[in-house]
Length: 161
Ligand SMILES: CC(C)(COP(=O)(O)OP(=O)(O)OC[C@H]1O[C@@H](n2cnc3c(N)ncnc32)[C@H](O)[C@@H]1OP(=O)(O)O)[C@@H](O)C(=O)NCCC(=O)NCCS
Image 1 (tube, helix red, strand yellow):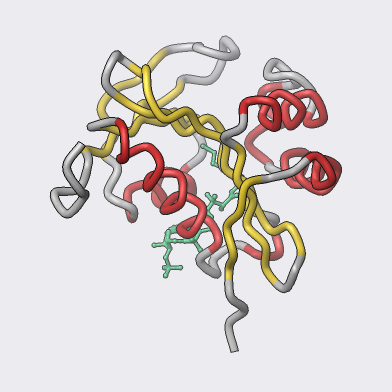
Image 2 (image 1 turned 90 degrees about the horizontal axis):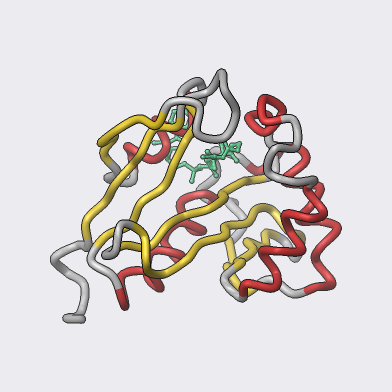
């Protein structure tokens, strides 16, 4: 039977486990710590108050860090999403995105995220959730990688703002 996914606010006791998941995310190797080390990254995310973690069988299986508003004036922004490699393709990423979006769409009309030009599996994942690729920023973080801008509008079924 498939294990249930529980998504909750992250707490400082989970910092090490979450940093390991970030360190494991293959795409970050191309950024050679331009975004800070995994420990620094998780430290900043914990302080922001909008870091959620997915628990499967009581263990940290993934995380999402986001802001609910301000992006291009009208949108929230998914800053980082990562799922532990042995828990992928079992709905953990979808559950994390759904939890982040439900907070974003309470206050914003739009959700945005960036993904690396080479990260084809993440692009397929976001497209499966209804995101559309709407632009490209050349060398935004590191010179040899372009960032693709993905966008999703607030679903019509959301309660009014
Ligand atoms: C991208 C990522 C977060 C997806 O998380 P996940 O838990 O594996 O995704 P889910 O199981 O919720 O998948 C939901 C749907 O997305 C699509 N999808 C997910 N991974 C996919 C892949 N590798 N290729 C094609 N489609 C994919 C599928 O439609 C899938 O539904 P299905 O399994 O029923 O077919 C995960 O692969 C990951 O952590 N990758 C490394 C870090 C990363 O690249 N983060 C994104 C940075 S922008």
